[in-house]
Length: 200
Figure (tube, rainbow, N blue to C red):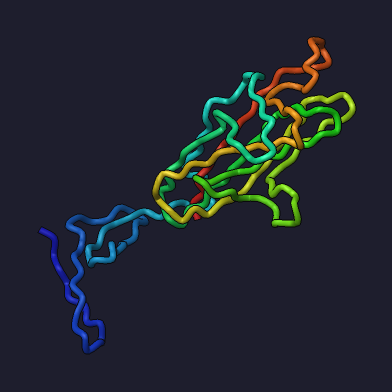
């Protein structure tokens, strides 16, 4: 049975009862309070260390397209992570290989649950994006990378995903050039999203 101590709060309102843990701590642990007076031992996450890293299966197909000028999900580029501490940050890294028509633009952004994060400021009618691709004269496939250090402030499962949007009524492709000519000047590619919990 756990022991109890009474702490004088030096207030007229009375006292707070704290319940001590029944066992000893291990090295470098600290004592934490659950907010209701129950004390327990806990280990601080390593500051600045990667506590976990998750990456769903890379998208290798070259059949995903969109003509949407509004942001829509990129199928498969979604990953959920459950932070181990409220103070933890989540580093989101991605690289999409996108093919657009010559001179056209494709936009990519990061979304946490239903909120776009790591995007530019609202400025006129411009798209608030994390990254952008624009093909040259040969309409080649373009790397579209991005990175953002997020503070979700939760220990609940949190979903990160990528969305993309096309220019006007054009078609944009994942993992292939817009022209997709079958010769050695063109390649096949992968697109990925990775999330890492960073201890603080």
